[in-house]
Image (cartoon, rainbow, N blue to C red; front, side, top):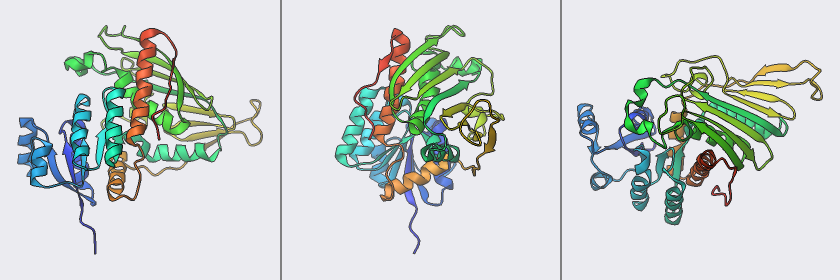
Length: 351
């Protein structure tokens, strides 16, 4: 006898919320329990499409109890919304970042742990088959010991992007909005960050928030990494334009990450591997190899994983503590850029 679909509610019907709603509707393992969003626009759109709508979680729970809830509301509402879900004892998937500051995130994670309610944080790129293949290669030791890594996020956000006021204010620049993805992948692939040193500039637009940043990372393993970010540079070098993950961005045949180990080097997302035939030697010709990968939508894979978490057959790939640890690195980057000092991370919050 087949299982009934898991009833999933989505809080927040903005851009990412709509993608989650579409995912829940198209996934055979799930059914849409509710769209929860107090805005008239969300109400009208839901009713036009014959979808269940409620203004609040309390109203939705009075109607029926979902098996899981996806929180896709604005960042500053994540903790309050997720707290309500946790208090109801329902597994929750929270869009990244888990909160708008690490202290609030730590409180939420602690309360969920005490209640025994699983949190999955929506750093969906970890679910991408490209990253899974890269993680497998690194963990296999084929690259040797990772020594040096570089990542680029160079894009040109158009002027109309900044017509929304909050996008010109602190907290809305490429460090918090975009580099948080790259930092999370770097932690996933290379381990915990020991210290950061960063610089930022707002010279391109003179807004109250940075448009360009350069970050140095030292990992506990001794590996060193640089991250270069700008939302004022037209270029092909970003995850968005190279991975093919989001059809809203034209795809370029380039890479955005370079990973160097003592036995070889890897480019991501094209998964080109460079090694020597024998012992590493800069005088010898390198062998170029393209690793195979089967593309798949990471948001779909993340939703399927959330189903496994709800059913108790899997632990969250990106737990609340994992999301918190990534957020702590981002806050350290901002602190370093603001003070000019190297920031050392202490008291790791990861599992």
